[in-house]
Length: 446
Image (cartoon, rainbow, N blue to C red):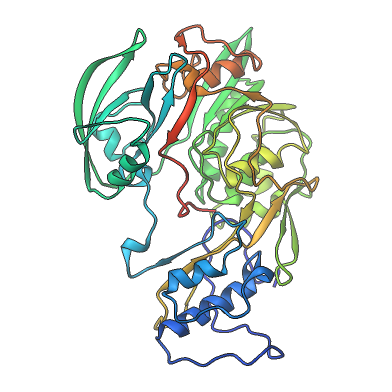
């Protein structure tokens, strides 16, 4: 089993027909291609791989529609497992971010005023090309005023369309100015670049990296960026993972290998714990990195490692999965100073289970939770999220400044050693988050 699985949080195709124990009660027989036969395949697949397989019902209703049947198998603790039909695009979860390339948050300011703030605009996305910018305020969606009461319904309506007209303005002197209409069309967002900066602080150089996600094959980019930081004499590092949903654990391992001192090829990185079939599997940094066939090897990466004793990591409720692994799995090796908000709490990993027969007979894909993840010290179990040592809401300072700006709320806090200091833009005191458009879709890579 251990040799069979590539233990990383990316899609790996697996074909199952049946794995029912022959000692169990006889398995029902259904006509091939029927809903019941598909559901039996789903049940068998889940019995073998699902983390909470021992909680699945013994006698499920095979006549249910496939997605409904799948839901009856899920544990009440499971927020992330999902299914899609590869022949039905409507079965895929949708999000404003992956449809249009932006995200927003509805916040209530200290004076009780409610505003909707664009917090993220992906580079080379439909939103970017339409002129949307981080920090803009949305006042209307398709001519209808955005309020706290209708925020959730409004988000659903945006995802049901192929174009959305936004009325947006700029936050100036405690109010909204320069309103205009911008139409954003549904479309593709290109792979996001790693943003790097070097700041000067008290004569010391501080590196900054904004990493949007962890796609496979990013080790060359990380190697280049860290090489530049090392050549510049960087002595501190700020990792900005606030909007990072995750991705490849191998890429996350590569990033982690470039930061602390004292690592060797045998240094343990991660522990995967599964059900009775999956067992427990441990991986070193070097081993985990090699599961990405395009990755540079551990020794090559370590040549550009910064060798630091501490790192600042910026997080939010959207920091998830492999990004949370970075936060948790660096802790055995260095001081991690987490600034921002509590992370999402996806302390688990999985891979895709699908029919690999030729020709394929079942078009459904299962994306189940298969493992809980732990660091080298055995620390994990953060399903409620990883709480920061320094809790700061980025919306405490409006307008939101560009990512990479040294005066941006979370970045300035890191540059000031964790202290909350807003020298260049106004402080809004206690604010309350009412709604976020980027509650991560279940579709996100694990």
